[in-house]
Image (cartoon, rainbow, N blue to C red; front, side, top):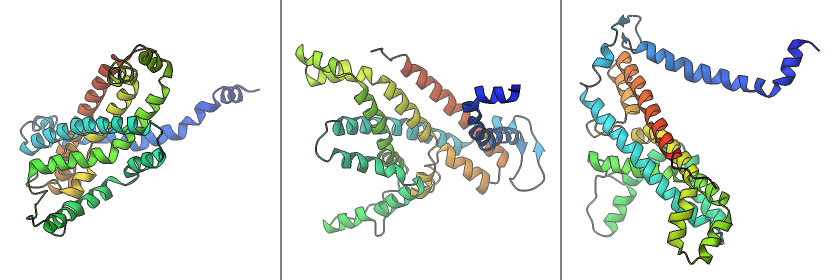
Length: 294
């Protein structure tokens, strides 16, 4: 047997990784490196004229008023959605884990919104919330109440965006927590009940500590996704009113295509990538330190 055939036989499983690896390099690594390269240029995004300006784009990041707003909004969306999604997901997992009649249907209904594209979900909710002809305002009209422009106030719009995204993706957390709950040996709960522990104590002292691996996965996944929030914002507010509901992701698109500052947008993208990576790694490390063995 030749050395090549022997190597292929020994590493046959690893060879199947190559297509996925090539796709990741082509669609993730190459655009990332190209974006980092463009962040050192002054460029409008379409012309052939590109001026190398070193770190000027990065120096201008702190002075951009709308970037500061987008960054604070990103923190709200990221951590707010992560908190709500995990609370709702854990509550749903505890509920459907009781094996009541129809629990499979309830699981499906909670998980189903994930299968809807973010942009479509945003437009669906927009028709609930719009001022003229919105479903909520139609209900208000039945009770003689004046219509409310739900998305006209930036603070209220941010909260609505956070809630909509949390409801859509709480099913993802539910699945992770349900898997964690079903992996906990019943002997711990039975021993606690024999010792006279209440359901509350069993949850706080046994169930929750043993769910830390599931909590780690759910929190990190939801946090990364929420810090990149884009489509729902576009559908609900299009970053309005007055550009006050931007996330970093939507602001990158705005700067690139509306303001025609491709280099500056690339610098924001590099900053966003570094920020999400640092936050996700720190969160993962902190939660992993809380894990217990069983």
